Amino acid sequence: MNRRAIVVLTGIAALTVFSGSTAFYQNQQAKRARDIAAARAEALVREHSPVIGPANAPVTIVEFFDPSCEACRAFYPPLKQILGLFPTDVRLVLRYATFHEGSDKAVAILEAARRQGKLEPVLQALLQYQPEWADHASPDLEKAWTRAGEAGLDVARGKRDAALPEIGQLLQNDMADVKTMEVRQTPTFYVNGEPLTEFGPQQLYQMVKREVDRSKQR
Image 1 (cartoon, helix red, strand yellow):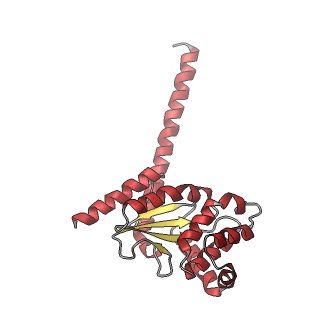
Image 2 (tube, rainbow, N blue to C red):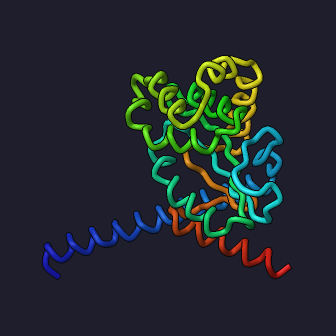
């Protein structure tokens, strides 16, 4: 065997070991996520959590969500499609995970919108126009308020409500559950208490469909 062949084969062997180690690590992470979800299920859904969809739906998607998160923005259209495919069978529960600068204030806008029955249009507006207000170094929340107003929010009333201590307490409670569930990134999804361990819209759809099918067999 010539020297070049030895070098190539050594490289392949190293890559194989690395790939195996990566797969092992991912499997361990997935197992850890499932164990946490099983042991701490009460931290997934709280009475104060905003719900989109029928309250009594047999399938619950929980999303740990940051309104400043680009991945959350990218996931929103396929998530809406999933809800649209199962309008009576699936509900979405939002949990706030404010990892970015200014996200706490964006959450206050969403909670103010919820008080006016405008959560969904304001959520869609904040995500649609996220690039203009959610600069991670210097977020411009006035632009977020403007977009919320265009989506139908009474901004003057919204700003008063956003300052209420109960909204701040709600966010603190959610962040405590973020810690309990060991959520480290957004979006993080659970379907009927089971974590989505293979990240992607198709994988989320498949989990949801499986649970919908199971609910119809009961």
